[in-house]
Length: 250
Image (cartoon, rainbow, N blue to C red):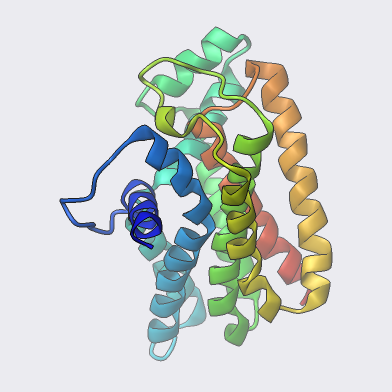
């Protein structure tokens, strides 16, 4: 039990800004194994967004409540996945060779592709969520954040890490863990979706897998594997897909 608690706290430390005990021991292997709890971290991030939305919608319009709840999740994660998405857009949008893509993604400055990508992605999230019935928005946030974080885990287990330099943001999680880690990640990702209409999962699950493995083929062709920025970008894309599917069914 102590080992699992340490793995969970390691995931919490790496993927959010939530404080953890200073006595928590760190190791690259432990961080690799902590990916089993990545969808569970999604529960927490989505849960905070849902709580902020539920509290604010009592006094503010739905659109403003959605917007502020999105800001809350971004602050909670330190824009971890959004930053990866922007770097991915810049690198793959402006780079024509493997080396050029890596050079652009390592640049701390955001470019045109990253700016447009972030605006489009965040705008689509906002418009999708605020168009849903109010009573389903909180659960949707929890389920979407959990489910979308499963797909980067799938990439880790089915692809290879492309870059071995120390500048990479996800150097410690470049290796797959045990099969039990993947199984637990799948379990954590699917539990919240059980409370949504079954028609929803009948659509989003195959589309999510299709997007994930299409994305996998694309990045393998371009850079021979994945990087941390690719994982963050995929999480954002699947989250948006989740909202769009639920909106279409609603």
